[in-house]
Image (cartoon, rainbow, N blue to C red; front, side):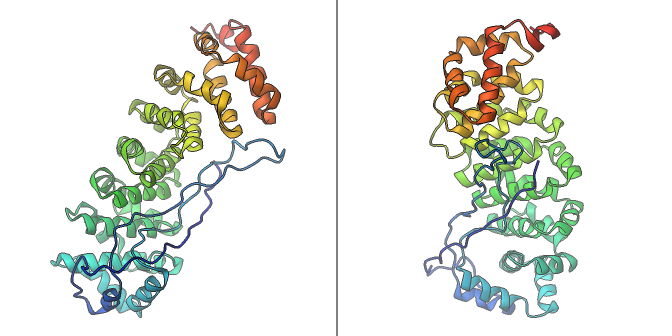
Length: 383
């Protein structure tokens, strides 16, 4: 897969809240008095438009179809306020040491302030991310992921996500035990914490060994739960993480066995889901394993894909015809099912008006469906 691109827009300033969530106790955080919380969720835009190939009219299926994240978007602070806070928090190394020390304070308010301060410092500056990690902040932040206080847990997971944006910090975060510790906020945290835990997994999974470890840590089922039942931002975080993880064969099988196919097909069947392309790309990589093909057929995915070939966007038509070709290539039974679903008329139309790659795949699939017992499937004696 190609590396993910990064972009991020500033959130508008929050409305004044007369009731701050906690009392300021740390002098180094006095600027927090000027800014109050609203509870808006992150407004990360996790996806970008699909790329195009050099042919111009073809969807580039080598592109990941997913954008990366830059830093957290909780919307709690205006850009100006956040800049003022960062300047006030980090005048010298002793301020940073104090924040890290405060993570282990017996006072919940002090711990919250420290975690929030580290989160803000790690938000935008690569240099500060390195300095924070080098000063030893990561182990206590990881330890606090098990906190029963929702806000403290949210601040810690978001700080770790921001720190993970620095390549050099990924190994430090994983070595501190974050892969297993992130499961708690992913499963039961606030909506922001769940989404940012998924984002942290996105970043860590860009290292192949960590991708394996994340899959084996049982992170895939709660990511699927977030995809199925989360708010829209959480769904986007989850589908991006699952796409990253499922580039690995063993994780594809885990995801299928954990029930990923049904929520993906539900998203594909819903034109208002705002996640059609993303869901289609994950299905596309899942059907490269036999378990994925079987699950798609069992969940009535053929009907969904044929409908997309008929009325979907050009991008979706190309992805969908590719998936249909994949499941029919070595299965006579699936060819019969696709034909019975009425696929040939929309495939003929696509072969005449789709992208170059879509036309080619449609023509090949039509030929396969018209001679269901010939070709690869028959040669292998499948079904």
